Length: 142
Image (cartoon, rainbow, N blue to C red):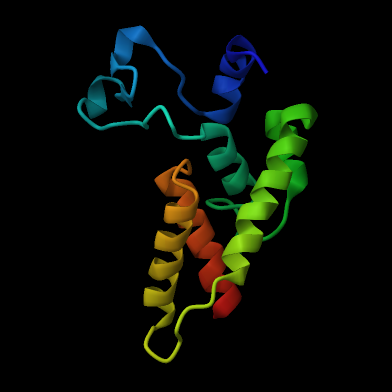
């Protein structure tokens, strides 16, 4: 998909794209004036996958993690949405396969360990998306 087409999705996804006016360079972006100096993301971040993951499990909206493919396709559209749903499911499947050492870990430390594991395996995910996976992981193991 062309960058122009992805950029058109920006307002729908609430993600950022390269904007030379508010950019310090190709790899660092900054929020508007109110948050000057707070990096928004690096060039390697996959904003689409990160947002799809949050939508899919209902992070920030649902009282507990759940599968909601319709939320992704409704917000992103069916073409890109279906592609992102399969990638989202792969991330969640991998998170579900993680096995912390429950002899030495609490639910909180196990969740934090899982978040580190997912961040190492999927460095392109935003911190919010990694937190969403941690939220689901802790719910599965509670």
